Image (cartoon, rainbow, N blue to C red; front, side, top):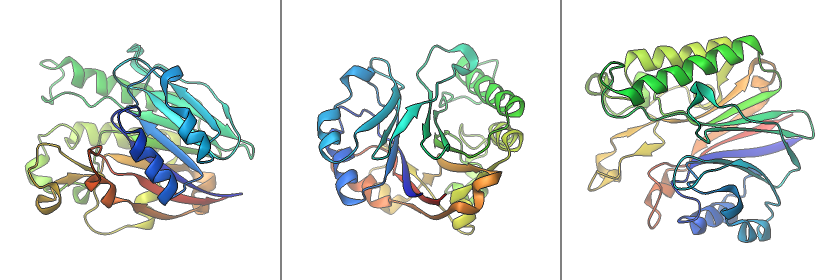
Length: 262
C-alpha cells in the first residue's frame, strides 16, 4: 500500500471548511489529519469532504477549542485515544488502516507565554502532557505506527527563524525540546520530515501578528510527521505547503506532507 498523508492545524474546521476542501482538491492526500478543529465531532462538515472522496473519519472533538480528526479515502478504524495529563481535552486520536498501520494524531498543548512551571500552569500542563506521552510510548513501544500533529515545539535550531532570540520563547526552550526528544527516544520514533529535508530553515507556522508573514518569514516548525523505526524506510517525499499560509483567511499553520510505501 502506498499513500500520501498530510497533517494540518486548521484552526477551526467549520470556519475553514473551504480551505480543507481546497487542499483535498488541489493536493488530494489519501489521509488528512487535522488539529484544533474546534468542533464537536457531529458538527464537522463531512458532506463536502465525502463528495471529495474522504468517506472515512475517526475524530475526537469538543465545542470551541482543541479537537483532532483523521479524514481518509482509505478504510480506517477507530483505534482509541488517551487523555494525557488528564486535561479532559480532545488532543489525541488514533486510527488503524487495513494494513495494520496505526496513525496517532496529536495536538500538544501550546503552553502559554511564560516558560516557567511555577508561574504558568499551562506550561506545566504541557510538560506533564509530554512526560505522559513519553511514558506511554516507553511502556507500549509502537510498531507499524505514524505519529503526526501540531506538537507545538520546534526542536532544532534551524526549525526557528532565530535560535538565539527564541531560546526563552515557549515552543523552543531547552526544557521543551528535551521533553520532546524524550518522547521520540522512548517510542523509537524518527522525524520523517527532517530525514527527507535534513538541512536548512524549515517552518510550518507563522504568527498572525506579523503584518507581512511571508516577507518577515519569522516561522517555526511546530507540525511534525514521525514514523516508528520498523517503517521509517518506507517514508519519503516530505514537503510543507507554504502557499496555504497565504490563502484567504488562512490558518496560521501550513500543511505538512509525507508519502509511505508499505
